[in-house]
Length: 266
Image 1 (cartoon, one colour):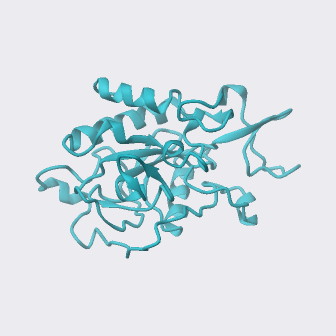
Image 2 (cartoon, rainbow, N blue to C red):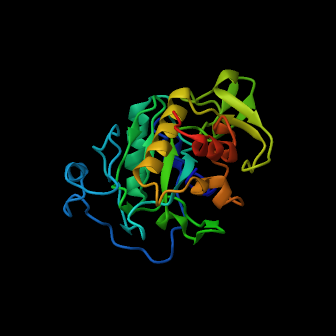
């Protein structure tokens, strides 16, 4: 989850909730937005580019989010796994609304639809905001500058009720309320990277398959730069305020890193 725990504004109780309202606590210096297409860093650049590619070959690259500046090493050194804490049932349409909302907030990240479709919104040479206030012993603070964000469309933590498991945006008695079945959720207790005990909306098999492929590709794309140890959950780099991915992912982040380190994933 890339938003903080600020109370939700009224407009977010409608049918188009795609991401929990955001105050990502960006770094104090706000860099200008980079127009990377104008700089020749769009998807076509990879055809003649030497070294690490800027765009994942099977990603949907039609949508754009604001990059802020170049990564120090020309490529992210790792990644942060998030969930959106928003609607995902409409599949690609909800993912595209998530990107549109994130763009309006000045954020930038990969996005994975409930169908497993991958959206890449900026080149891998440039970073954008997604992690907010964050820290890692090996990287310091302000991790958006070092790690690429991967948003996975998902409701996040849900609450059990007699009608099913409900997300945060439901309103008492509203006809548009969403409820998930027991098959849609996973109950986990706090431990490892998981900061909150409770029921989590599960990532789909398609989403996890895309996540594994993406991480494997990022490592293969820049093996001297991208490090498995820096594939982190948002709950690992901001544990006092974040719960993603928590139990939405079918394994702990440590297990994911072990899987990635052992060879090709996907």
